[in-house]
Figure 1 (cartoon, one colour):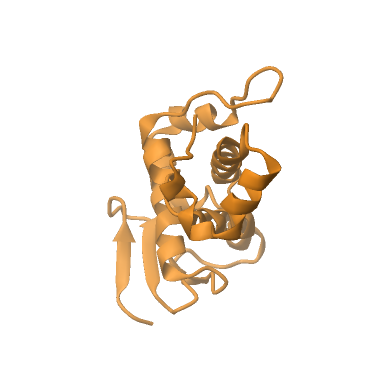
Figure 2 (figure 1 turned 90 degrees about the horizontal axis):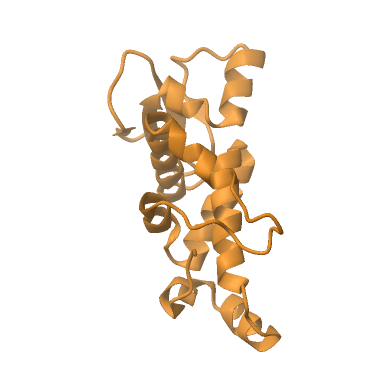
Length: 164
């Protein structure tokens, strides 16, 4: 395993997650528990918090981005509720806090990687953010525009589409 990178503040209770490439990321155990997969491993499989947890289906860049999200939510718990808000008719999303907009407004491949990692790690609030972003990308688009948008995933963020 290569060097371990710390995400967020160093506390007495840190947990290390290992990426696909073998990169270790250390995060406060409370922040890591936003990942229900990690929580289940700790609670139900008898894994100790001092043992590194293998997340080998998630690459280093994506795991780091996901853990930054977890650390932010742990330190700003009131912001997590914002991600569950939709309009009454669920046709569009409530505008998001600037931190969430900046976090998710990246190239489309990164968005998909983050959504897949959030699904694997079972992080509901991050899945909500990803869903809102994808909804904002496809809102009011014709079928032809959607074909263009999804034909080249790396260009989606550059097209000017983004969260409401």
